[in-house]
Image (cartoon, rainbow, N blue to C red; front, side, top):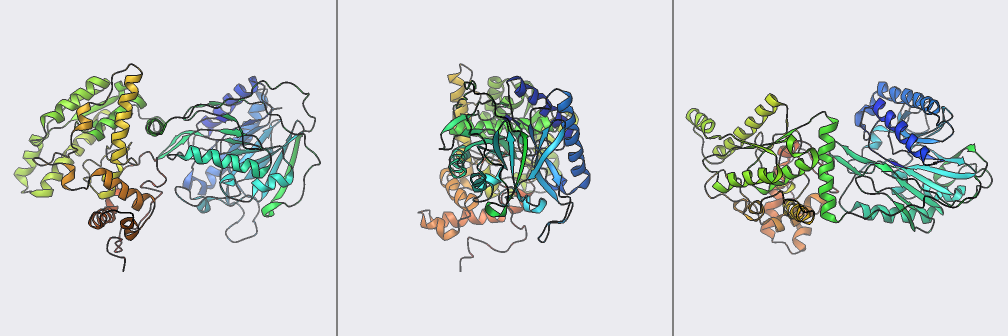
Length: 579
């Protein structure tokens, strides 16, 4: 099982990775080699699936890959590769025409495509839009390899009840192998293990769950491939966020009569025999191991590092630019960037105004000393004065002008020097609209966009603690963690002037944003009615701001973006619409 990364649209590069890792697996004696869901095209391909040119390129690359594997001496070892396919004939049912795209897997053997099948259960929730793009597969593919029947599935086929899992038991397969591109979410690894154990018991056979790693836009893939026996006991579990090959010897039952016919959920068995002769008995050599799990905060932090690194690398960016205020958000973003790209490739800019405190400057300088990132100081006071000479601005307009001047300055340096700007906003601020459009919201990527403020503090403390445990300098100044958060756009300003205490705010937002609970439900849990009303009103009014915020790493079950889609023009207010 090759737990590796792929890049959307890079057909040649992804095919090269398949060859490389197949050679590696074959060198370890593998009789069956598998790669993640849509390995050849990357995942998710989104509207690329609707372009016939891309679909045909995927199919051509698959065929040439089969030939190349044979030329490389790997033709006798079956290789499972996910790719983008299309149906050749119209299927029964509305919306399933000939030529419709499919999320498919091919078995490559002896220089040809020996078997293809498409995902049966198509997810249509959260970040998934597979009903929009694909038509389902209606077969249970069963592959006979060295006298063992292997049933095959793709990701959602395990997450949904019915379909290929019970059909595997009916078909009498000795192994159920599922290839996946399952995005990371906080605590998902525990749910994933429980799922695989349950499905193995339902299928009545050893079950292997191969996952992808890496990042694609806002999604991060954390690996965590799992193999369990028919009782649900773990045989092997791969590390999180690490690329590699899991080579494993399995003791599997010999296949019986060739299964045929229509089984559970109306699936037609498609059986292909590649090698019917069983292997001679031998001791198990590669018995697998269970990699240690990352604790919660380390897991989140690692996901944020992987997400930023993947976004920058896959889009050809080598360096990043961050506005450093001395505050906790920009300090955490800087630490993530240094871990993702190396401190030499991280450029910070301190942009003090007349309202900037002395500690905002000294904390930014301390951060630079601790991490080794590049820091320069560009005061915005002259720019601000020039604007104020031309415009008479007061109150919020005056405050936001400072933020927008900083945003303009960062984008100018980005254009001049080629760095991408990182936006430091967190999920609490984005929810409440506590950010300035075209100011602190500018940037190409928002690393902590899906991280609530209370978790920002927890991550900063964890990162410093981890540094001490490794004998390194803690990257984040203690003063950035302990001082009251402030935008410093007017004298004496602190976040608590506008927002409730973050511990309370985040608990309300988790219920409203992540769990879609209503006003009365939240109040019934003991939260102050006035606070709930105010938070929900701020959240509803800020939708237009969030729509214009850059992408950022998703770590929750419902991040702002594809997970949560609300109309911009919307007169419904949860805070006063309960009548």
